[in-house]
Length: 340
Image 1 (tube, rainbow, N blue to C red):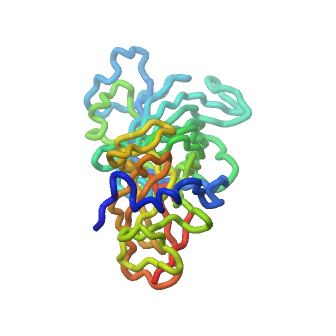
Image 2 (image 1 turned 120 degrees about the vertical axis):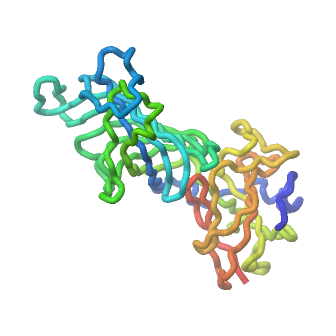
Image 3 (image 1 turned 180 degrees about the vertical axis):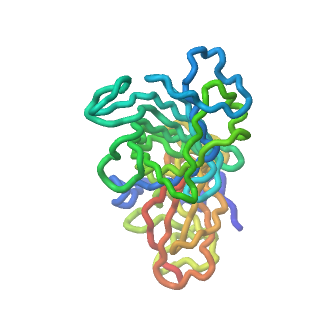
């Protein structure tokens, strides 16, 4: 399979076409959130249940909580094991504070117009299976009580307030989904329990939903109404008069694929003497069929411009075919190319 050039794929015509290109009209609009279904195991909530914090993290075995001290914080830790069914690694860390709000409080509760158990934040630090960081999503909000209006998005009331890496600038909403065959509530432990033994001691198993609105979506560049996708063999654009073939290697040009390795500073061009490889998990589909991706990298000298080399799956029938990019589980707008 042909390899990407460390200077530019193809030649001057492609480089010229990249000047003044634009995204599809849809990319300028606010699109619906992309739902990330995140599976987390060995979830333990270490509750502040002792006044003497010198005893914290000293008990090696399972140490049940003695009950939450009113208005005291807790620390939640769990292992992220999958996103949308794809194996990953990672860590959930949460910090809830008990508030115990109620319109009809008993002694020790706080009177309020709403019913809430706790307020706090969570971080979803997601890695590839080899331990390479993908990015972090950060949420803040409330537990317990009435869920927010809108779609049935689970039993929690958290907003996505930002992200890093492949999720830079994300916003949205987080909820939870309980299924009898999956959910085991987080284990409540004393703050005295040693968290070094969390996996050995075991914990809960949860599936949380994050409706992510990204700052940027991965988009195939469109110029003069046509997607910027070229034949790898001669760098000529795929057009109605020059269609692609099943099994052929193509190169598409895109924006919004986010961080590369090595990284570049915001707003700076990609290097011209080496490939800056896309870091986020990336997929290309043709008519919904996964294509083999050889390399995805920053376009040398370009700013937020990428080149992705992929092979059209065998068996794609003649006629229009839909091509779609997905990066860090965030899908872009499909474009159409002709297949002969």
